[in-house]
Image (cartoon, rainbow, N blue to C red; front, side, top):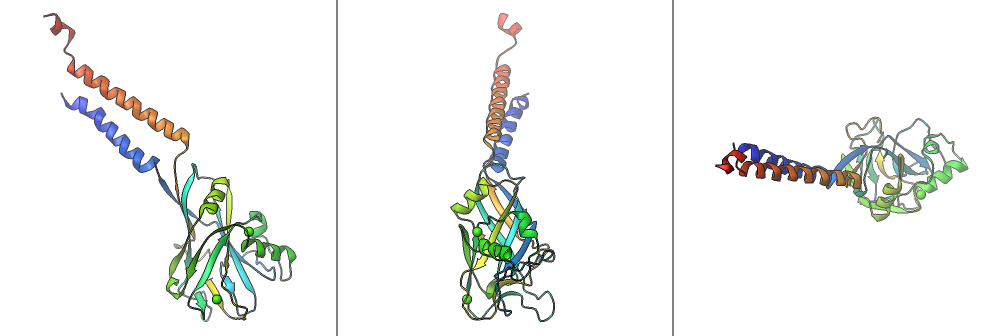
Length: 253
Ligand SMILES: [Ca+2]
Ligand SMILES: [Ca+2]
């Protein structure tokens, strides 16, 4: 009959390992719900989800953005990586794609965005002052991280590990959250110095840009876990005591 005393102990072990795997550090991957670019002339095509960034042969410079829905994230985020797919094929024959620069590397930096999500989605024509202000917002302010990109990144995810400012901003956010992006190593020549060329949010599946986060559970969840483990421990001890103690009838004999 010793298996009846073993079972609560096994339950306790199971609960412990579950708590360790699930509760202490949970990993979540969020997929971008929006992405696009604004040019330095203030242009933004409302329906476009092309997230190319940098200098183009048309003489315009582009900053991009990525939108994520954080409403399902609970608990403090302890680390986060923005992963953005960089194509290795043109969207149409002859189009530039991925990393296109005469320089061996370019630096891509991620910034805070103070523009509301609804304004990021709206359309703006060339010369729009509102569009130009958004272009500036996407490439300035608080830096959240940066990375060096090269031809070797074509056909891969470019990864930007978020710094303390980025984590603080994520933890302060509720609902929709936007990252702005810019190439900080552009020269002053009209040429191609771009990243994510030919990249469209709607056509890069299954390589949709993503935010991979690690978070700890809410304090209330932790308390529940500890309380649950305590109750299991108590049950284990009670059963063990009951099994060891002989029946009352036997004691009288
Ligand atoms: Ca900004
Ligand atoms: Ca450059």
